[in-house]
Each structure stands twice: as C-alpha cells, then as structure tokens.
Length: 110
Image (cartoon, rainbow, N blue to C red; front, top):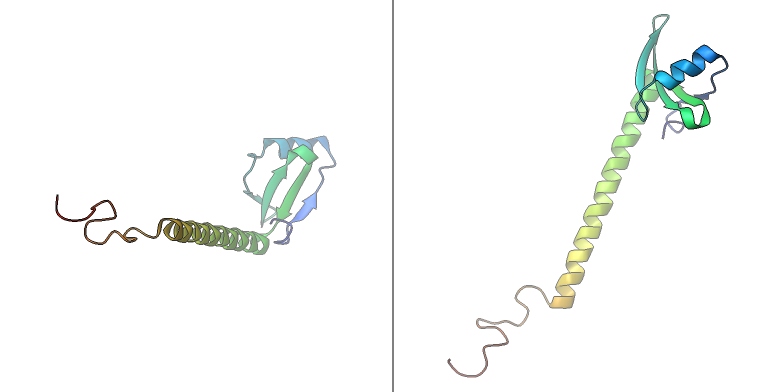
C-alpha cells in the first residue's frame, strides 16, 4: 500500500542512515521533519529499506488503508450474512414448520 500511495523505496547507503533506520519503531509510519519539510518513513529493516513519502503520499496511504478496512469489513459482513442464510435454509429458519406446538407436539392434547 505504501508504494501504491507513492512512497519511494530508499536503501540506506551510510552507517548513520542504517542506524536511523534501525531506530525507527517497527511496523509504524513515523513523521520526520528535515530542513523544514515533513517526511513520513516506514522502516523495512528486514530488507534494509525504508519507504519515504511526503504529506500527499501519507494522506493517500491513509485513504488506501481506510478503503481496505471497509472492503474487508464488507466482505466479512457478506460472509456472515451468507452463513446465516445458509443456516436458515439448512434448518428452515427459526420457526420452520413448528406451528404453535412444534413438530414434537404429536396428535391431541397431552
């Protein structure tokens, strides 16, 4: 999602850059101010890379995450409703043929 949002993949070239990368909180986008500009950095230390973007790219990333979360929630809801409809069709719904006494009532009063 970061690359799709316009973040650039940067490979640290100096030891100082590599240390800065290692010091960033893992799994989080960090805002950094440098020479009056705002940058957003996501570390990828496993591959010795960082994803770097500006405010525009960060807003796009947030939008993609929100869209992805909504799509996932919609899919989960659809699956839940589908499961519920399958249960109703298998069991015939809550009142399936129960009438006022249900199928076990048998003939005549008890």
